[in-house]
Image (cartoon, rainbow, N blue to C red):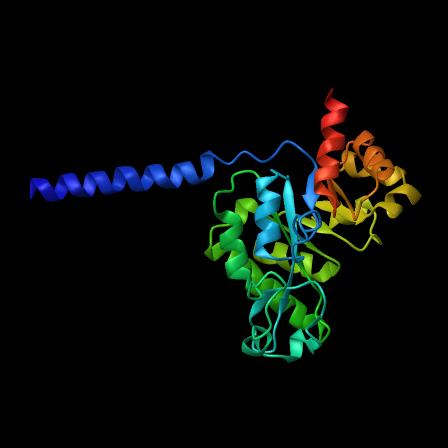
Length: 266
């Protein structure tokens, strides 16, 4: 009996220690770089591939962005466009889509596979999860949001995940299911006051929106909103956003932006 008690005590001790370490060791990267569809460009990797995600993590980017869609048979997959290999994703079953691999030989990843890869050996890079609006209906978009949040919670990836979308109702739905979620709106047609009123966490707009509405930058900061801009690939715009102290800058050139940040510190 004594042996059983000792074994149980050790199990509880190391089990609790493992759970504590999984959260206490997280220290998000102290830079503003979000790799758009992963860090794909420099090494000619497929966009939204697990390889591009792992490269963003290797670079210690603050975030790695990726796009989620749902197939005809309700599988959550990672792909930017509504069409994959000339097939409409929302009207095609997952088993059909996966017959065609990415250019590096990867199978079209599911959300579960992508999140698990993003959680592995990663204590600094946020998973910036874009939920694409449904081309079928607004209600299906909300269903996708429900299933995405359920998956994130199931894999205990809440702390690592930021939700973004062009569909405002999708973000509001996420907050209904998970009030503590970090959300950023993409479309650029809502003022900082609108975002705050609807409890959206941040403005993630095309950089031209902020250049046109420069007063939104200070308003967002006063409202405690996160500032993010996409998709920034030239040094002039990078420097402008860094000078304006944006929280995040989404780019296809993460290596270049990391270098600009390094040079500003000198």
